[in-house]
Length: 107
Image (cartoon, rainbow, N blue to C red; front, side, top):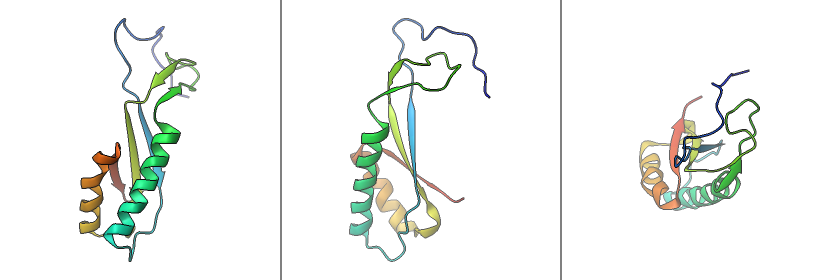
C-alpha cells in the first residue's frame, strides 16, 4: 500500500490537479477515418461521463480521502497495435475538440 505524507487537504485557495484515465482496447484495423472518429466520439463521451466532473477520492490514506474533487483532465488510452500512423494523427488532431487527451500505448 502506498503511503502519503500527513496532510489535511490543500493549502487555502489551491485546487488539486486531478486526472482520470480510460483505457480502451479497440480494433481499428480496416476502419475508415470517419468510422474511427465516430468511435473516438463515443469513447470520449463515455470517458467524460464516467470519469469527468466531480468525483470522490476513494483511496484510503490519501490526504483528500472522502472529499469531492473536480477532474481537471480526462485521458483516453487506446491500444496502439491496430492503428496506422495516419489514423493516429487524425484522432490526435480531433481529441482536444472532444475534451480529452488521447494517448496510444503498446502493451
